Length: 147
Image (cartoon, rainbow, N blue to C red; front, side, top):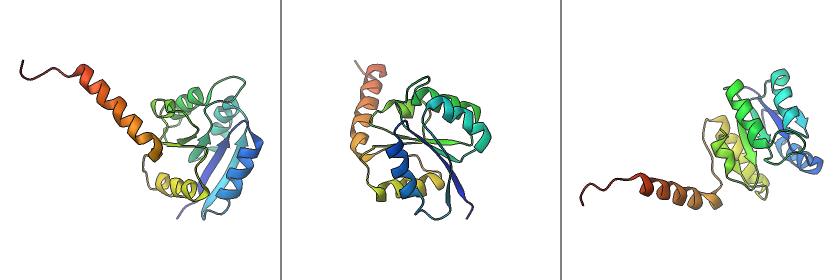
């Protein structure tokens, strides 16, 4: 199996340290960069060409994680972004996954295994909300077959 190159993008150093500690235990995974801003993440994607970027949504100053996710997935379609956050906008920006910050280490390791295999992920705690939102949108646009 090839090495999975990962970039960590979070403005909280403690969060990055924790992620690094967890991911260093995952076989065939290499942290290629750690950044504290969305703008740095965009800039270093060019240099490091990670396979996966774990990105927080809110990172001052400059671009938000959402904007950076959108830019990264548009410029480098081979880079997958997993949002580590408590917001659902990540999926609309092009992220392949959504993981809550309160996820346990086992869950985070499982996310990487699934992303490596090409899966798209939603944290179980938001699945119901996403499905409800989709149902509402479908109902609004549905035209009844019979009066």
